[in-house]
Structures are given as structure tokens and as C-alpha cells.
Length: 140
Image (cartoon, rainbow, N blue to C red; front, side, top):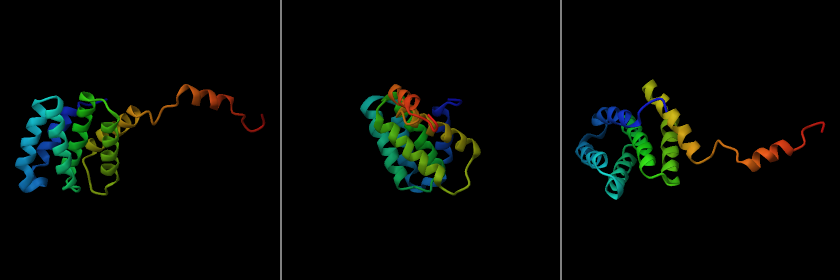
């Protein structure tokens, strides 16, 4: 990746304060737990942040933050569920029609590709490559 997802998460989190209103204090508490812990404690805080994001689907910066911390969660716990969550969040973010920060869009587009790659969605396995080679083309 051409950027640091943890730094991008910090930046977008700070911009999210006005988007979350009365839930900002909850977000600060959960983010503090997520950032300073590992394992199940961090995972629970991460899930709490994602749940908060569900209540604010139009909170542009907070949605970007959720995508960036999902990448952090992937690096902590590399399981398909986190890759799938990341893809879903990226797709929703990129499909929305609001004006967005160009840098956030570039970062999230790059992460989207990384989430897809992590699930092997853009790769052919050896059998697929051989099948394509052996498949007769027009005129064969």
C-alpha cells in the first residue's frame, strides 16, 4: 500500500467528531480501547465502532475511519470475515454520491483492491490458468 492505514484512520477519526454528535464520547472510548489493546479486547471495541457506524451511514469521515480500522483488524487477525467486511464497507463508501476527499477515495479504492486480493477474487489459480491455455480458441 502507498499509505499508512493507521495514520489515515487517525485523520478521518478526528474529522468525524461533528458527524457523530452525542455519540462522539462513545466513539472516543471505543477508539481508545481499540488503539491500545490487542486480541479479544481490541476486537470487541472494533465491533462496537462498526456498530456505531451502522447508525451513521451518511457520516463520511466515520465510514472512512471504519474502513481504515478494518484493514488494521485484518493485519491483527487475518480471517476472511474481516476481508469481506472491508469489501462491503468500501463498496458502500465508493457507491455513495456525496462529495468526498480525493485522498480518502484513493486510499479506499486501494484498500478495496487489497481486501479483494486477500480473498483471492482477482487471482486465477493454477487450474484456471491451465484450463484457459487448453481451451480451444476460435479457429482451433
